[in-house]
Amino acid sequence: MESWLWAAIGVLACAAAGLLIKVHLLRKSAEEIRQGLARRLNADTNTLIDISSRDPVMRKLAAGVNTELSELRRQRLCFLQGDRELKEAVTNISHDLRTPLTAVCGYLDLLKQEEKSEQAERYLAQIENRAEAMKTLTEELFRYSVVTSEQELAAEPVDLRSALAESLLSFYGAMEQKGITPVIRLPEKKIMRQLDPTAVSRIFSNIISNAIKYSDGDFEAAMDECGTTVFSNSAAALDPVAAARLFDRFYTVEAARNSTGLGLSIAKQLTERMGGSIKAEYREGKLYMILMFT
Image (cartoon, rainbow, N blue to C red; front, side, top):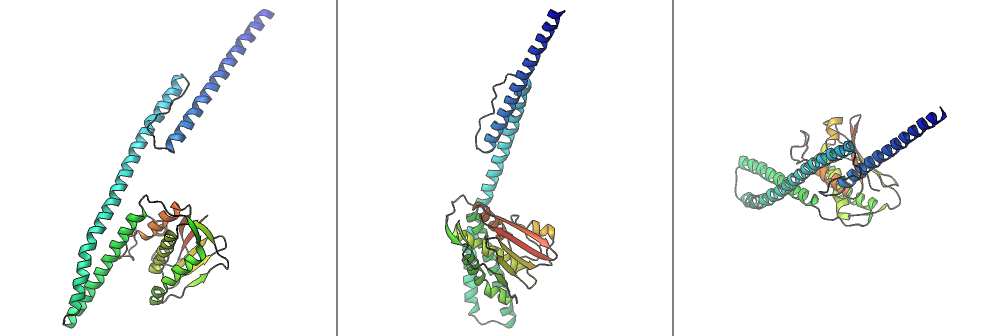
């Protein structure tokens, strides 16, 4: 009886050991798949996930993951190709429009020197206004194609407080024309960050320009000692859904008929390329733009 019991115990022990080994190998294979997936998602590579286990179920799982990775890579390449073609098309279109627009503006200047009736003067003013709007939109498209290129941004000491003050000063005339008296709150000390000064100026300018465009008559910019900047203005034409889409490429609201919808998209891309963050919130009839550089 005792020999039978010990034999049964031995069999169970062997079975338990075999099961533990099997579980260990399965866990090892799962970890190999996890690590392989993480590496391939973070790198541009065609290599497939390989595992040491001969278990048919785990090898089938690895094969399925490889299939999905191949499809994901194909779709990513299609997206990158389409995005590259779009940027090239934008660059070419904006460049092609510059020459005829320059000629149109030149002839308009000559036409302004000729004698005209009052009605012709009125028509000419409208044409000139539309031509200037087209010129502005063309320049914005061109700037977008440059900003979204793969060029490296410089990194040098930038005083965010001074950069914001300079940007605000450059829009003083535009605010005065709209009857806006800005409320500005800046920290007493410098806020230094390692950033691209041209990109920082572009970000501030695009945000301020957007605020003036949508403002119902007020504007506020406040920077704290950590460098977080909050821009706010009343904007009855917006709502929470529209505010959430303001950073989408080519998105415009009805009130912005002379806009390509690229200004805030450019600001977001530049901010994120320099390790910062930017978001828009709409609360109680006011639009808040929150910008932060770490």
